[in-house]
Image 1 (cartoon, rainbow, N blue to C red):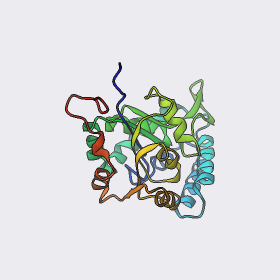
Image 2: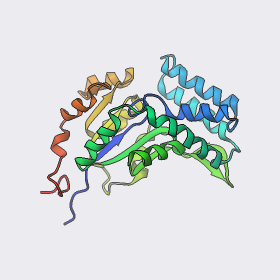
Image 3: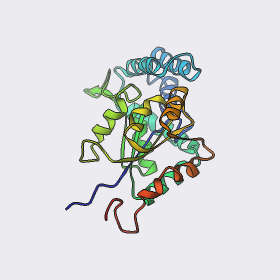
Image 4: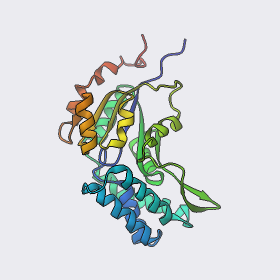
Length: 249
């Protein structure tokens, strides 16, 4: 009989491991360097700002951001965006929350398979994942054809169903219902993962996620108590003796 698969830890990036939005940093850089269309880039950034100021709910704001982001990249070269993403991540990695790398070490030592699922562009999300040692990651993917962006998106993970779809697309668990033991996120878009998770943690949640956290009894945490909080959510029960896969008898 095969051993049970290791438990999963699903991690959000923007506002959770990183105190900002990687996609905002990338889009601002693309506009500043003339790689992206500045009209659409500015419109995307304005829509995101309205959300952060509480003037627009997340879903309509995210829809506007993604539409303008796709339009801003239309007919641009993927290699130029990839180069910009490298520059953005080189600066962003220094601004990660101090708990980020200790959290990942804790999860790795406990035998978890970590998944990074982010609404930010795949070009920068995959760099973040590689740097952080996370083998499975997915971000928002802009379609390409003949070495140009088409102005459409394959994935838009900040929209309803986006993160659940990403979980299926990553395909790291053989069962229809994956064994998600831990998840962390800060916005209502993370709730669809939380509903499938044994021990979700709402990290400095937006108003909608905070309301759901209270209703469902989900743990909440802030940047100064996160590591202590996850130790009280039952994470220790998933730790295995050295050399043994969590869940093995």
